[in-house]
Image (cartoon, rainbow, N blue to C red; front, side, top):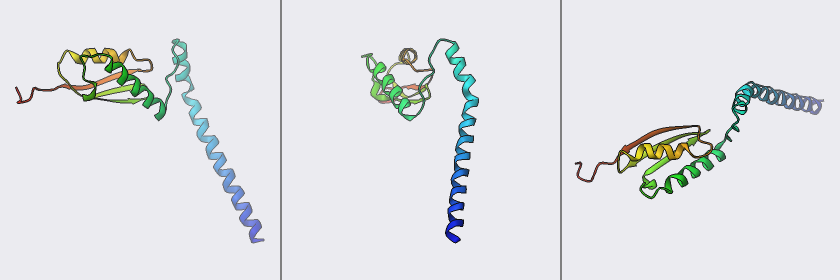
Length: 125
């Protein structure tokens, strides 16, 4: 009798877990109009997730590295769902808009936030 009750309790817990999972998936369907809006513009929606963010970050680094006048090693790139944030230092103030334009040209980038600063020469002058 106790084994039967334990079995029924386990089955009930399993059904509750399935119901919660189905309910959570139903909540994701509410974001579907956003995806259809992106498709209507002719663009494919960007891939999401950590793997896609890492891939986009690598693409941004590669695009910046192609410009020989920019030291990409002093720039850090953060990507999240197509939004890219740039941190670090550059040698010249004119490099900031150049870098931003390079990053905007990378496929999958939806926005660019620049927090780049000009590195002062050694000695503070």
